[in-house]
Length: 286
Ligand SMILES: NC(=O)C1=CN([C@@H]2O[C@H](COP(=O)(O)OP(=O)(O)OC[C@H]3O[C@@H](n4cnc5c(N)ncnc54)[C@H](O)[C@@H]3O)[C@@H](O)[C@H]2O)[C@@H](O)CC1
Ligand SMILES: Nc1ncnc2c1ncn2[C@@H]1O[C@H](COP(=O)(O)OP(=O)(O)O)[C@@H](O)[C@H]1O
Ligand SMILES: [Mg+2]
Image (cartoon, rainbow, N blue to C red; front, side, top):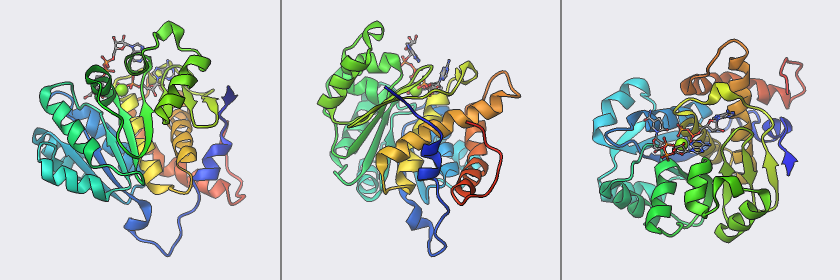
């Protein structure tokens, strides 16, 4: 297992081309947020908008619409039960993030199946939270696309069948190979299983043990893969590194880090990194 280091950031986060418009920076659809877990999809969408995704749409329970509009006017909103609208949009975007706060109800499963039926091999599909649990529980087949799973250890146990105590590099890798997907196995010192390598995240802390922290990571992985499409694996690695690097900076002054604070710090952090790649002298540790 290789340690992931900060050099991944400047490999991925480079200055934006001036000859560009919002379409240059990707389109994303985030699916989740039932009547109970609206906060999860708000946190994921916030991470995606603040990552710099060109166009962000949220498919969610309509009960969350006004909260999303008031918190995040940059995002568009559709009803996740509108099968046709969700199917049409799924086909059009670069990246789909599904699962934060989706829930495990009958309607959650129908929404998941509708989305999975309409993805294609050119898209990135980030599968998180309830979507992983539903796939495992109901034996739902993996959709088409470049698949990135973002399970915590219990979600990985459900999906892979490997008990948490037995989740070693060798067995995790074997299941990753069967899935042919990227797996971001979240824990203290998260592990990332790609098609060729296994990385360990050497940063991050218990200040991040707060509900919504993973929803935020899913939104960032979505935002980075929609925007930095040259190398999808590197984009996912950079998102994972940036998530904890920002958290570590905040944790120097705070006992706990709130997930939305990571999102709000993202534009400033990304600016700093993009200047670094141009040999400017700035202070950044790690
Ligand atoms: N504000 C919100 O709306 C929030 C919504 N959430 C959503 O709630 C749904 C359920 O997700 P949960 O993860 O809460 O529940 P889960 O039931 O999927 O997982 C929690 C269980 O896993 C166990 N576990 C073992 N190792 C773990 C690890 N390393 N990290 C986390 N749990 C571990 C816990 O002890 C617990 O029994 C998801 O859709 C999620 O996105 C959560 O993100 C919390 C915040
Ligand atoms: N003790 C810890 N040290 C480092 N990172 C942690 C710690 N606890 C949680 N995290 C990080 O917080 C996130 C938690 O994800 P998840 O359990 O899916 O949260 P949620 O579903 O509530 O959003 C992961 O990125 C995980 O690595
Ligand atoms: Mg989660």
